[in-house]
Length: 264
Image (cartoon, rainbow, N blue to C red; front, side, top):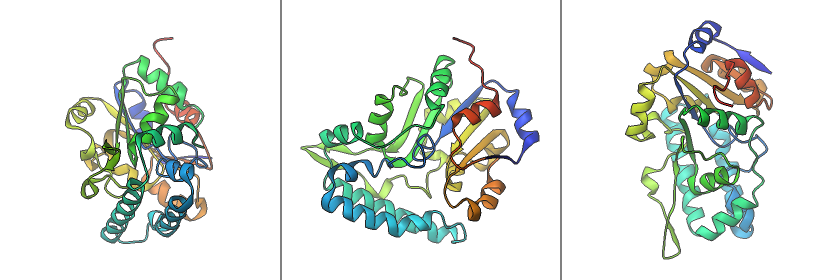
């Protein structure tokens, strides 16, 4: 089901051909039944890591979808969640494990993603994939799917591996509540700011923070809503220009925007 909430704005911006795409990864580029980038390695290793990972996820995930919680409180809880999750992962992960786990992951791109990424690459349109997830796994997954083109910029949390140990600055990680425009490298922001419009795609309301408020007038925002639809639909309709509910895909985005490749 597709809900269009700002038709005049969409019609106006549709006429602008020069744009940038900024998109979330987990449950945005991937389907709602996919393993998340943070779940790929625990599911592969199993045992105590998987048990602890599930306990952390089941405790914190409901807070992520609670839009009645004060923003300052939610910010602290989401940071705590991210720090605990990455700290746990660092005790188990190696470069080899990431490669093997991602190869065997139950993670799937939404229908239409490959076609759209190919079209955008052929037309030299930048795609910023911004995620609060596990950047090493996301990079390998996109490579395996054949969509990590030269025009794709990946902004996420990357472990550095030294002496077979995983290191990550836990104080400066990206998490769902602080995943903001300033996390994008400055040279990429300059490109975005010279474009005529932005296409923003996410699956939680916080994803709108991937751009600054002053950029909203030139941004078409898409929000995938596949879970807790009844209780969240009103809020999503108030925040996103277009809501794609109940497992819609990227073919719907292409249809709405009338994207047509100039190269075949």
